[in-house]
Image 1 (cartoon, rainbow, N blue to C red):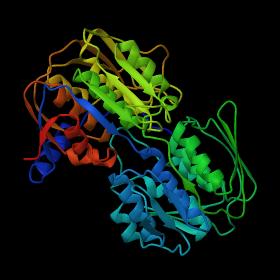
Image 2: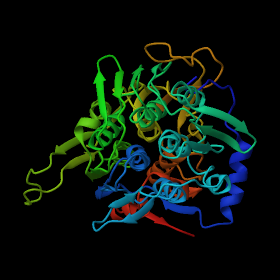
Image 3: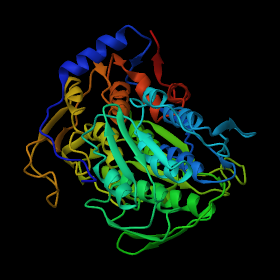
Image 4: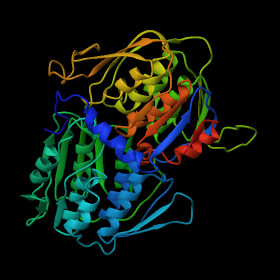
Length: 475
C-alpha cells in the first residue's frame, strides 16, 4: 500500500524518556520563559516539502540547475550531502539562499556512505528514479524521518517495478537496477500520497512512453514540482479528478526556479500569534496556498490581513507581500476540524493549531485522517494544564480509513485552559513546534528537550523568536 497503515501502538514514553536523557547531555535544550505575546515580523522562504524534491530533480538534468530562496534547514543539508555523494557539485550561488547544482558527473555512491544519511531523511527513496535513468542502478537504505505513523515504501517499490526496475533486497537495504531501461506505466494510488506521487513524477519524466497516474496528490508543492520539471523539458498534464499524465522525454536540462513559500511554517507562526495573544506578520506567506487554513483561522476568531507583492507596504512600493496574523482580544471560538489531502486542512497544520484551540471557549474536535499516530503530542499539553481527550472513533463528518482500527486518531479539546510551564521532550518536527508554542503561551519557565529537531523544517527559528520578543535561551 502507498499510504500509512493503521497501528494500535501507544506513544512510547520509555523512548521519549530515553530521548530526554540523551539530549540532556547535549546543548539540545531550550529554556522558554512563557507568558509574553509574540509581536513582530518574520519571513518564510521556500517550502521544505518542495525544495528538497526540486534538489532531487536536478539529478535528471544534463546541465546545472539554480534554486532560489532555499531555507537553511537540516533537511536541505541532508539532500545536499546525498547529491554530493552521487557526484553532483552543489555550491552556494551569488544570492542569499541560492543553490547551484551541477549533475554533469553523476556517479555511484557506496552503501556505507548512503547509510550515514539513512536515519536523517526519507529522501533516498526519491533518488531511485533519477539514478536509474542516469546510472542504471540505485540503492535504498533503511529510511528515517519523523515517527508519526508508518509510512511504508511499498507503493514506491511497486511503481518502480511497473516502470521496469528490478529490486533485490539485502540486509543493508534494497538494490535496484534497470537492465532494459524504464518505461511508462498506468498506475493508481490507493490513497493520494504526496511521496508516492513525487516518486512517479521523478521517474516517469524520462521513462520511455506515457505514464498515467490516477488518484494523485495535487498539493501546491506537487504542482510546483511539476513546474520545475516542465522548466527542465518535461511534458506533464494535470487532468481533472486527480489524474496526471506524463509523456516521457529522452533528455532534460537544468532549471532556474524560486519555490513557493512554506505554508506549514507560515501557519505555525500564525498559530503562535493566537496562542500567545500576539501579532505576527509573516513576510512571504501566500494566500493562494493557505486558503483553507485562513478560513479556519477566522472561524476560530483570529484576525488576518493579506498584503500582495508589489503593493505599497510601510511606504515602500514593490515590497514583498505577506500575511499578518493576530489575536484581536476577547475569546476564541471552538471548531470541529478534519485533516485531509489538499485542498483539505493540511495534517501539518493541526499540531500548532491545537495549542491555540486549548485557549478557545467550548469543545473543539480534531479528526486526523492522514497519519494515525499524530496525536501523541497532546499528552504533553495535558501535563501543562490542557484538557484533551483522544479517541479511536472517527469524530469528523465522515469515517476515514483509520476508523475502527484500534488507535487514537481523534482529539476533543476543552477550553479555555490556563497553561503552565513544564519539561517537554520533542517527539517529531511538527509536534516539536507545537510544544514550543505551548511553552511560549504558558506561565512560567519550561525546558524543551530535543529542540534541535525543529531545525529540520524551521529556518533560524531561535533568531525569529528573538525578533518576536520571545524570552528564550540556551542553558
